[in-house]
Length: 185
Image (cartoon, rainbow, N blue to C red; front, side):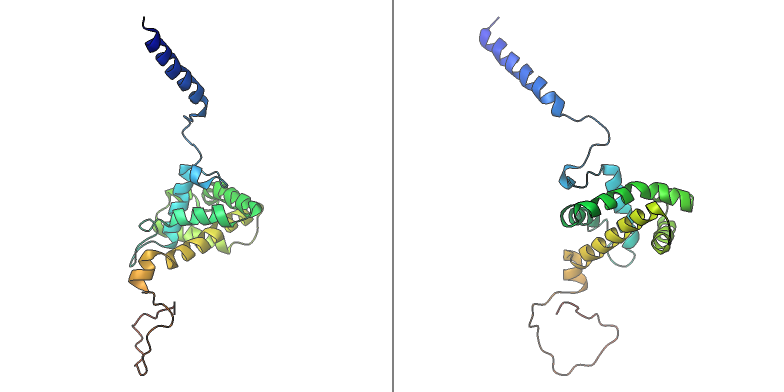
């Protein structure tokens, strides 16, 4: 046998054996982009459904079309401190079970009307230990989703076109109740 070929094959085999422990073959691997939160793909899908409940896309684009779940996760990963991140992830993990217990089915199995009802009623509830974490999860998701939607390229170009300050001056203009108002300047 050729020694060079044998050494080459041995080097490739050794490299493969060394790399083997770093490979993760589990079904629910943690998404690497959100290392502080340590969430899975299924949990990201739940956040996507929650943001789709907040912005369903009836007249305007919905949350899935502008990928609000990614914005929410980046903000939660980068802007919340460790205790808030911990409460956020606990609320996320408990939310499906909580909605099954209180509303009869998991949130991920609800249609749009049921999900909207469950979302509102959960935020309005008053007592409970794990309710606090679930409400923190929903309120934080709602806050970041709203921030992401209002600052999205879609909103800033098509809904409320942004004008740099100082904007143009219009001395005398009739007020039209159907005209959209530029809130940015």
